[in-house]
Amino acid sequence: MIQDMPSPETLIDVCEATWPAAGTQRVGAWVIRDGKGGGKRVSAATENWPTTEADLPAAENAMRAMGQEPLFQIRAGDEHLDEMLEQHGYAKIDVVNIWVMSVAKLSREIPPPVSAFTVWPPLSIMDELWERGDINANRRAVMQRADCEKTGLLARTDDTPAGVGFVGIHEGIAMVHALHVDETLRRKGAAQNLLRQAAIWAEEKGAKYLSLIVTQGNHAANPLYANLGMHLVGHYHYRVKQA
Image (cartoon, rainbow, N blue to C red; front, side):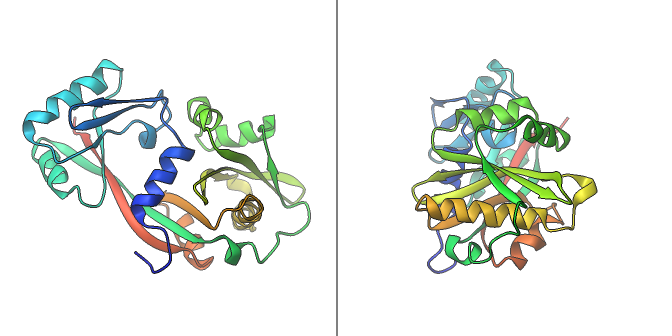
């Protein structure tokens, strides 16, 4: 953990609070999430305490019973579970980076006039932009059910709606989700403006940190976050049953 930065475990808790599953249940050693089509973050099972092979069918059956294919999130300290799932034919997918930085450092530079806004509830153009970025109605429903201080983000470039995002706050930490910039308007500063606007809003709400979670394979986003001065503080990944 970077000194004075929130731990990966804390940031995962912030993610769960600001991007919540539709429901959770305890099944033996497992936490089972009902994602309602909202993506891996809200659908993956995690272990409550160290599991054994005898525990695995309970999780698999519970996920299938709610219409979900078995999916597990592997966090730091879950090495035994990771190895067990690999032995049972689960493939490792979507290694995720956890980024964070001080809100005060990011909010110092104000976006250009009329380049970024906070808007809630979302405008129809925001839904259209999210839809183009494969952030469908089921994923947008996650934003609606988030029970926290929250807002939408909208960027404009060349007098055109260019990008969107969602940000929620939990225990003094803001987390940005569903960040998308239209393909035709990328590399013009929209993503940076969205993040700075998120930091300004979060600072006004009393948050001290701004965080993001993004796959390692996103070769546009990760360098941007590093160049903004964000700290890479941890990782997690998923395991899914191979066909």
